[in-house]
Amino acid sequence: MPEQVEPELEVHVNPIVHLIAPLVAIGATMIVRKIITVGYRSVTGNDAPRSNDPGVPFGKALLWATATAAIAAGVEVLAYRVTNHLGANTVD
Image (cartoon, rainbow, N blue to C red; front, side, top):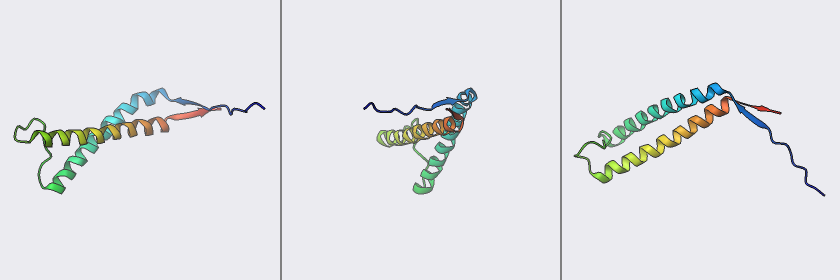
């Protein structure tokens, strides 16, 4: 007996979303970077390590850069996904 395959719904994303999504991602990333920098300062009492400061040990600067990049990348993916989801509609 052949299996019945349910038809997949087509998802169409509004073309304007392709213009708005990068702006949302950039804005969200900037806000989150500011929040984690302020959070670092409130937890440690010191400013966040700067990669161009020769007084900051290499390992500390690398760890901070890796952590902020990972968080920013996650926020960027989330912003794109949410924006695309809100701008999408399904066609039967």
